[in-house]
Image (cartoon, each protein chain N blue to C red):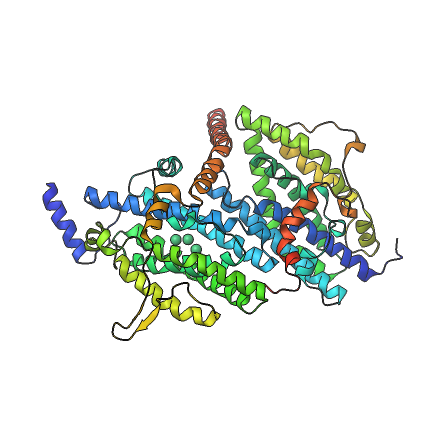
Length: 257
Length: 317
Ligand SMILES: [Fe+2]
Ligand SMILES: [Fe+2]
Ligand SMILES: [Fe+2]
């Protein structure tokens, strides 16, 4: 550890936060125009707007820290897959509405406890982004929690779909709560909490909502938890996601949009 | 009171520029005309989300991505206000949606054209939202209160969309050769369909006279189309681009721009369902609706269970 400077640790951590929000925002933005009912189309688009907006704040901070003239768009559009530091959970396909909501819920619950802690980061700018985002993310968590409960405890069909969604997605939650180098470095400079320290609160909340939704957390071996995204080792999906997102910037190098 | 007298009073209120409200008497034909027009408008907003939604995941900068997402979301909001306005006339949103999904209801034929490049996001904003504003600003004074009020909110946002689209094209027009070509190509493809958005010529628009008498409509199709041509013929100069019509020429005598003949065969063909994307658009709406059925059913079932639980605990208390 600590053979990295504070500035480098902070820069990497900002990219990790930006990437997580951007990639999940990119995923859910694909629902816009295709939601199950107009009101929920609008609501989920709000979440996408918040997440991409927050990603921009982190990237803008990263650009300043780096001081090499790169912009938010350079980070978003001109980095390769192995430079992206989002947890795998964020890049999973949308699936049906239930799977989208489950992925969202599992992320929102983590996002909220993380931001609460990031408010006391020794980097004031990071703390300020966290404070500002917290209001939005409390709404995200309330929204996805309500839908997990509604669908889990709705009809037999919706219950079945939500249980499948949970079974498929749960193995990506371990990474959220496990330190990767980007977390360790940030923790060493008191920029961010150790993810492990958030586990109790995270699991407490998640278990509470899933119980209300009458859903059962699958029993899987700890080694079945999938990780790597925070170190830049992604799933096969990630290349396709970036190919789509970055297409215009890659085809027209240096153009202004 | 007999209907003849009520109708006479209704016509007098219209003549006096009174607003008609949902509980007021209105002739059946007035109600039907409004349901048709408002629901077509609502459907257009919702179907209109699809061509622009096509580029959300590929927007070339984060600023543009956020702006486009917000724009498409605005259109969803417009759909929502308009369905609500339509419901005040005594018809359910679900029935209106059924009409859309079965292909019985119409929506603006412009949305049956494809968005092929990023520049289309600019051309759609400038020309399609632009034409929508021309059509809709007079509707803010429509005789039917709920529709007029919905239009006030909608028009504010549409004019923002229009400026945003123009600004997007302006950026491309100052960009690389490839970007300039992309912008000109988009304008070429969207210009004529945008002019068709005002509907058939006045002589082929049999309902216009009655709608104008009822103050649902304030200008004829051809009047609005001319206004659009006059505005765009000027604006396109700021882009350093051209409109794909060699006959556009200022006519001093008329005080308007002359323009070339519209291909009405194309217009009627698209209306009939044979446009490039009619099938895709309708399929996409049906897919979203069908695949969302389990979600809507679950939400209803959950709400019913909650109500039953609350009733039970109230009884126990
Ligand atoms: Fe609209
Ligand atoms: Fe509109
Ligand atoms: Fe619009």
